[in-house]
Image (cartoon, rainbow, N blue to C red; front, side, top):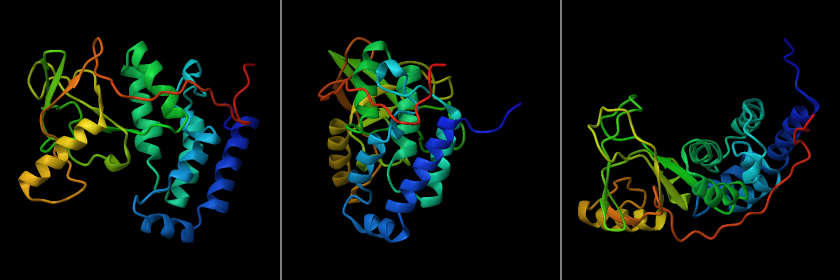
Length: 244
């Protein structure tokens, strides 16, 4: 078994390591950390230009095709730099969830802007009391007219304040300990409005309060998606694997 990197994989490794060495020093990281957002949209755009946001997306949706080795090499370099941007939450976890669980319409709507760096999505899954049982989901999604009504609490939502979209795990039937049903994609603007009003109620005054209150959102066929400005541009990168 050959454990050596291919030419394209080595190019990718050199590209990412060169980027973080040149443009993400500890001084740069401190400056970004002190900024109002706590992460850099400029860095995010550069990651998209290098094709690093497309590692989990299929080629037909503007991605490079899922690859564990390329993802490992990228995360290894970013870990050394302690990157503050929502790379794991959006480019890896959320993109993979849309790829594996989304309908064809959702993939077409969400994957191109995610890989282009125009939208950021993060999963909202963990709940109080679930501990390490990832299949336990108490948040419910009940049909209300032309949409669903979400009711529940999500905690420890990584990079929630940076997200344009929250991918919320919720169940339409069953008990909390039953196997979870597929996720629903919910526009963050609606969830953020609910979080703000609930913070006023619970007096926490925390901008990053993770409590999610019931809020209706429109559905399109099986899942609710609305209000997204999409871009279908495809991205390429010098380290892209050849078809041969």
